[in-house]
Picture 1 (cartoon, rainbow, N blue to C red):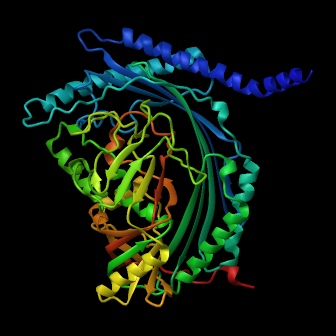
Picture 2: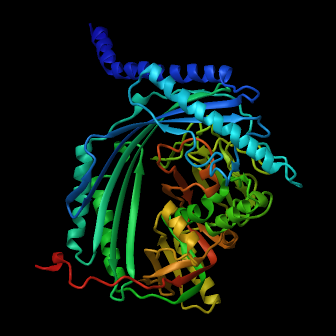
Picture 3: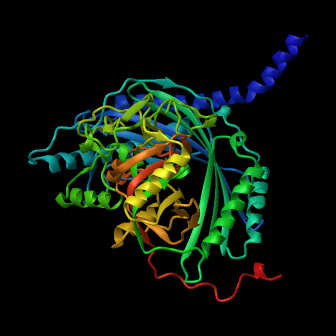
Length: 591
C-alpha cells in the first residue's frame, strides 16, 4: 500500500516535468527536422550551400518590480513570456566564410542581432518550422552577399594572416529539463522591494532612491549541423538598490549595490538586506559633508569585494579574445581599433607569453565549479553558448599570460574554443585570482602605510567599493566615445587611512588612470578571498558576432579575489559642471 502511494505521489510531482519534456520534444523535433531539410535542400543555382547551420530557441520569462519609499512604482504583473529564435548560418568553409566581416555599403555582415526573430509562443510543430524556414532563407541570401563582398574586399590585400573564420569542435549533447526552475513568489518579491525601500524614508537628504528586482528565466534549446544539441535553464534574480543625493556644492553622490542569485532560496535574509540598505543610506548621507582631494598618486588598497570589482572592470573582458572584423572600407578597421582603445584597450592576444601580473599571482577561469564557500557561482555551466563543453582554463600562471578565453571565432595564436562563448562572444565565467604572497589584513594595512610614508605622504587610500557596476551601458559607452574625456563616476567608498589607524571618507574622487598594465604593480595581497559577481559587457567586437545573448540579459561573471595592494594608482577630483541642488528641502524633512 505504501509503495502504491509513493508511486501516485511521484506521478503527481513528475507530471509537469513529463509534460514539459513532451512539449520540449515538439520544439526540438521541429528544429532538427527543419535544420536537416535546410542542409540538404538550401542552395541557389550556381551558388554555395551552407556548410554550418545552428538553430536556437530561447523561451524567456521575466518579471520586474520597483519600489521607492515603501511604494511600488512598477510591477509587470504576471510574468511576461516571450520567445526568440536564432539562426546562425555560414557559407564557404571553416577557413573562410561570410562572418567576421562588416560591410559599410550594406551596414550588415554578421552585424549585431543578425538572425534573431521573435517567435510564436505556442509549441506548434508546423509554425516553428515555418519560422525557422523564413529566417534561414533570409540569412542564407544575406550570407551569400556578405561572402561575395568579403572575398572582393580581401582580394589583393597583402600580408594578411591566414586565420580561419570558424573552429572545428567535438559535438556534445547536454539536456537540462526546464522543470528544474524554481519560480519565485512574486508577492514576496513585491513585499521585499517595498520593505527595503522604506529605509530611505529616514534619510530626507537622499533625493532619489529605488529598489528594483528583476526575475528572469531563459530556457535555451540549441542544435547544429555538426551534431551538437543542448538544452539549458538559466534562472536569475537580480536585486538592485540605488540612492542619489548632492553635496552643498552640487556634486552628485550616488551609490548602489546588486545581489544576484539563481533561485529564491539563495537570496540573503530580509533582515540582512535591510541592514545593508541602512548601511548604504547612512554612508551616502555622511559623504555629503566629507572632504575631497585634488589629486593622488600613491599606494592604494582594494579591500573586500572591491578587489574583484576592480579586477573585472579593468581586466575581465580583456582576458577573452576578440577579433576585429574585416571590412570593405579600409578605414573601418583602424577606427574600430581606436574605439576599442577608448573603451579600455584591446584584448591581450599580443601579450601571451609575457608577464602581465606579479610573479606571485595566478588567474584561472573555471565554469565547472558550482560554488565557493557554499555560495553559488553564477558563471557555471556544462556547455557554452556554442554548445562547446566548458572546462577550466589557466589564464595567468605566476604572472605570465598563458592563454585567453575564446569562442569558436579564432584569433592569432588561439585557434580553438575554450568553451567560453557567453552571449555575443567570449567572456569569463568564474574567475579565481590566487596569490603566493598573502598577508593578514592588519599586516597589509601596515605595508600600505609604509609605502605611503616612502612617498612622503601623510595618508594612503583604501577602496571598499568601486561602484557603477562592472561595465557601463551601451549608451554610456557611446557617450564616452563622443566625449573628449572619460569622466567616470565617483567612487562611493574610498577612505584616507592615517598612520594612527583612523579613516576619513572621501567624496567626489575617481580613478583617473588604472590601465591593465598597472596590475603588474600589485605588491601584495590579502589572505582571505572574497566573492564578487556582476554583469559583464562584451567587448564591442563581440557585438558584431552572430547568434543570441541570454535573452537580452548581460552574462553574470563571478570573481573570487583577495585584497589587492597596488604600489601606485592615480586618483583625481570629479570635475563639474554639476546640476543645481533643489531649491527647497525634501518634504520628508518636515516634521
